[in-house]
Amino acid sequence: MDGVRKVANTGRTVVCTIHQPSSEVFSVFDSLLLPKRGGETVFAGELGKNAREMIAYFESIDGVAKLEDNYNPATWMLEVIGAGVGNSNGDKTDFVKIFQSTKHFDMLPDLKAQASASEKASGSRESFSRTYQVVRNLLFRDGEASEEHKEDN
Image (tube, rainbow, N blue to C red; front, side, top):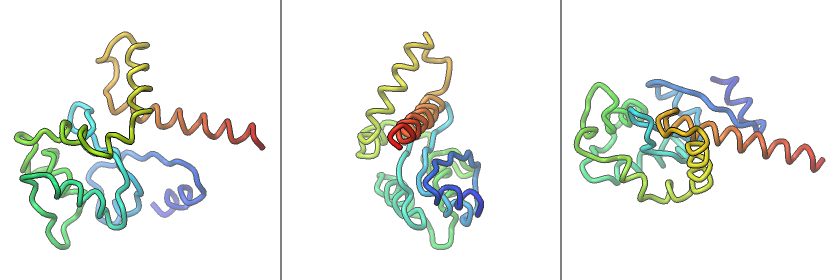
């Protein structure tokens, strides 16, 4: 993970797929796109130091248990949304709807528009998961920005 961090520190965008990382691995990441089963986004945004931003976000939701001291925030987050072993809220809390009413969601209008255009072009909303569309558009957008930057120099 040190190598990944070094690459990111050069200003490059690094996209990783992680599944229940250790606290140490999770702390390497700056931001997170968290889909629930089915691909709908339940969180997207900056993690903050020691994942404080993400923790504060989920702890602000009614019914979500506070993160216990010395507990892995990645494991806790998955348990909170019902993706972990301890399914505490996943069946009774609509995390997608909650996310869609937040400032985090409001900061994604360009991505939503691009994903919508991609869905229309594919002819089927079911062709790809929503998360795939968002990630693809993030990568494509960064690629365009890189090409524009090259042309300016």
